[in-house]
Length: 226
Image (cartoon, rainbow, N blue to C red; front, side, top):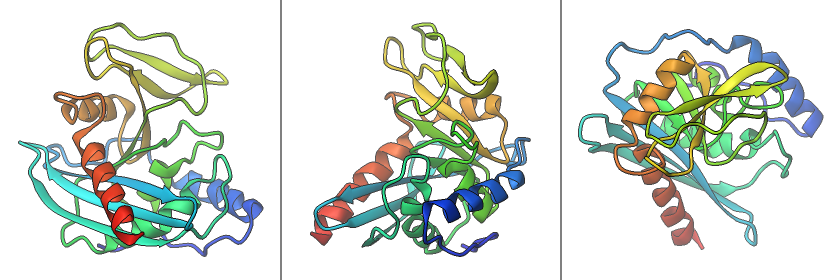
């Protein structure tokens, strides 16, 4: 799989912020994804702080039945310091290597993290979407920025996630009576469509099937490398 927009790796947090501020203008908030999304790739990472290793996983599933089409893992040394708001620079290098190794280009990327719901409106889901040119969504387990009301208790209920008066995502209940997830646009998809796709990927559990598969694969890859 090709990478559309490459950039140099930053050496400092200031350089990383400058890259985010430059690339965020390329984020497309319109629906540019296929009308029928057939394959979705989940992205996740696992860390071992003692060894400094990071394992990245990319798992492509069919949306009908969630059959695994292909999966790739990459284990490497963390190459950027821990800085809130700059996690993409730790996670993106191995994630892009895993994506490059895929034989097929998916219709949609789903990240365990955030997109527009970020202080500079350029979280991991935006970053990976812009550099690959693919539609992307961020699905976070916890809130990073913004405030919100509690959505209804029923599956499919949602509330806007607001930051400085701007809607940066949605707080979406994926299962009755279960904690909601935080959905935000990454690239080339609208928030309404992103929420629809997340619900579609959550038939039985709180987290999307793509994230569940990628999380397990990344953890297994990391364990095998230690």
